[in-house]
Image (cartoon, rainbow, N blue to C red; front, side):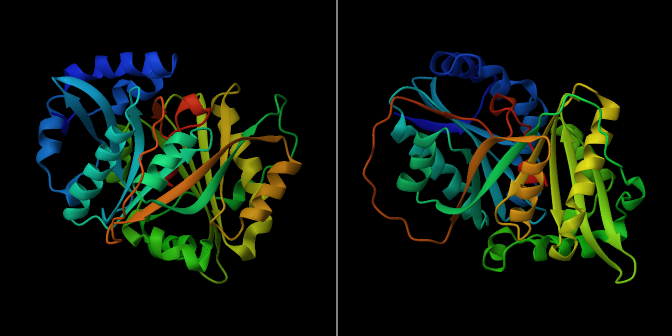
Length: 346
């Protein structure tokens, strides 16, 4: 009989073998130490209520003590009412196991108060997209396109360093306003945040370190209107691959090129050989303009990702199982997909 349990240390090596069998070369990206909570932290974290959890949760489906699949998820926002499913590993002919794992975490966390589940999947993984949409009734929300900086030469553009400053705790409410207004109006309700999500204090730095990465935050403000018009987030776990997320108001979208020039200069000053990836969220009002700027500069489109959502309170429907050979999809920000792992943190 198949059971779903929190991942055990003994399961990790078996999951690695499963990944290597289905998709050779991908296992280090999906099963590194930073992807799991280890003893004794896992014991404490497992007994925390959902609203207090802050690290990634992993579950495995096992039969006769052998893992058949793995799923992981992590909270997306301070209120813990939205969680992101960021990893799914299934063996051969395990479509039904995938449905069981997804339904398990949705029902477990939904019953504990989680309202929305989100997942971001590379369009190169159509079987995983079909599983979430057809079997587990996630719906299309939007897309995220990822661009990679391709220019190997020195940046010649004028970098306007004085435009940007580090955020302060007092900026949190203004940053919340910026984030809300940046999203297309009819899509805002699904990604609602709070001012606490924009308090970049010592607690958040500690959590980032526990999750295995470091961040940099910079803002562009309008002193005349006492408003904040832009937020830049830079993430990295290895100081080689950098993920960049920029939120801009429509009124200040013309400053996007200044953001890009600042980002390149900032990252190249730390590592001249760094790989730089910039995400453009199609649910942002300035997305079209951002795409035009990146297309005109030394960036190349390197990834397209579907954003899928499920509202826990929607009724469950019947489905027809569609057998597939195997399914493995990493977090959209896995190095295996040539980008970093932090879209849900921005």
